[in-house]
Length: 213
Ligand code: AIR
View 1 (cartoon, helix red, strand yellow):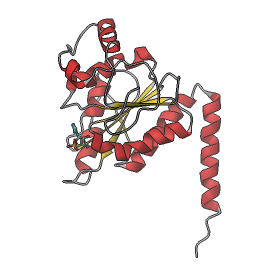
View 2 (cartoon, protein in one colour; view 1 turned 90 degrees about the horizontal axis):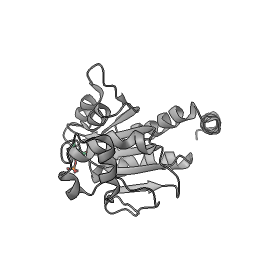
View 3 (spheres, helix red, strand yellow; view 1 turned 45 degrees about the vertical axis):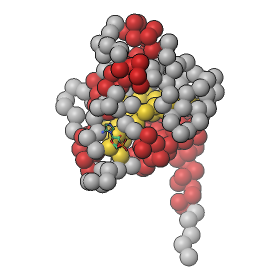
View 4 (cartoon, helix red, strand yellow; view 1 turned 30 degrees about the vertical axis):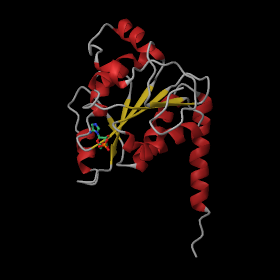
């Protein structure tokens, strides 16, 4: 079991992430297989996996545990759609080796979409995108100093060539990142496409039936 600090892990899952200390010694640009092998030896102490015995298809990454209150909305939405997912804390600045290791090995372990959230000088999504060709969805976190405008600009203003699909600041962005990840996965999964259509229909019905006092 892996856990976000302070949160209880809910799934067994493979463990390919290194704990913060061991990872500091990992070479960032190691051979792909070598990284995978090294990573498998360790178990992350700052991650959370959802849906028992399922291979995670979506990884939800965040720069700090302080982002979890917001990013929980992404994990919960994926959970609601039955999409196997895992959540991890890692930082482009504080744990750069862990971030690049994760991104470089994500595809090989079956991850299909990565959601990356950070606040302030929010470089996590960009750094992750630099190390993988998987779709990366960025969620800017609300910041104390600038209310998330700093996070938004740092996430969205990627140079041509390395795309990050940037969502709204905060919880709406977290929810929509999950819904967009689901839409991407639904391209090749008719059952998931059906669930997404039903979700939209339910949402529309609720609004059409809204009565004001
Ligand atoms: N952050 C962490 N490493 C790099 C960045 N940009 C972000 C986190 C969080 C903010 O810094 O994503 O939104 C503040 O983190 P903390 O840990 O100080 O609460």
